[in-house]
Image (cartoon, rainbow, N blue to C red; front, side, top):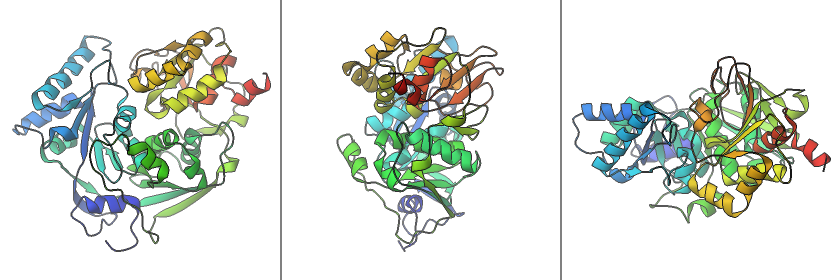
Length: 424
C-alpha cells in the first residue's frame, strides 16, 4: 500500500486484494459481516432463494435482527419476523429473538460482531453506525444483500473521503448528536453525497464510544456512504472484551488525500435542534424559541445507549414530566435495559412519569408505540424528521440530544437542560 490513503481507502484496499482503492473506481470487496432486519431481510431471503444457492457463504457472518416491528405489532409483522426466524434456523445464522435482541445498530457492536478494519454491509441505511469502531460500514439494498449472503462479496465504487475536524473542548450538555447535527446543518443533507466522512480532532478524542456511534450513525443524514473514526485507546477498550473473532485495524496515512477538510471549533457548538422536516434544518438551542410539544422520545439506534439514558435520567432525576406530555423511553438493547435497571435509571424514568419500552425501533420509523396524530409535535433523539416519519404527515418531529429531550419533557416545550439546572 502506497502512502496517501484515507481510512476507508485502506480498509477497502485490504478487502479487495491489496493495492490501492482509488476514489471513483469500481472494485470487488470481500465482506466480513452481512446484516438484515425484519423489514429488509424477507426480500433479501426471497432473492437469495432465486439464486439457487444452497447455503450462505458463511453462517457465522450473516446476522438477522428483527427490531423494527417486534414484539410483533400485527399479523403482517409477525409473518415478516417468521420469515427471518425460519431462514436463520435453516441456515444456522446468527439470529436474535425477542427477549435477547435489541436495535440492530446498538446490538451488534455490543455483541462484538462488528470490529475495526472490517467491511460491514447491511440492508439498513444506518449500518454506517459501525464506523465508530473503525470499520467501513454501509447500507445496501436487499438484492445486494442477497448476493452478498451467497458470495461474501460486493461490487462497489470507492467513495472519496471528506475529513471533519472538531477542535477544542465540548461544552456542557453537548455530545455526538450535536456535533453531527452541526455538520449536517452546515453542509446539508446531500453535502457528503456518496462520500466517506472521517471524524477527527481534540473534541472527537474526548467523545465516548456511545457518542461516536451516534455521529457515525447519522453520516447517512448528510448523504454519506460511511462515517469513520480512527481506532484509538477508547476503541480498543470497547472492542477487545467483546470481539468474537480476530481483526486487523487500519489507520489512515499521514499524507492521506481528502476531497475536502472541514474544521469546526467545538467549544462554540451548543446543543442543536433539527426543525422539521430535514436533519439539516438546525438551530442552536439558544435560538429555538417557544416550541410547544406533545411527545418526547428517548431511544433509537442513534441515542438509545447507556450514556444517553444516563444523561436523560440525570436531568429528570427528582422531577416530573410536564402535564400532557408523553415521554417514551426505548433502551437500545436488553443489555442497555438491564444496566439502566441496575443503575436506577429506569426507576428515574418511571417515577418522572415516563413509559419505558422493550428494545425496539418503534416510533422512529412510524412503526408503533408512539405514532403521532395530525397537528402533534414530538421532540425525539432519533435520526430523521422527514414529513410523516413518525406518523401523520401533518405532524412534526424535532431532533435533539437526550439532555434536551429530558428538559423538554419536563417543561413541555423544547428547552435547554441549563433551564432545569438553573431552577434547582
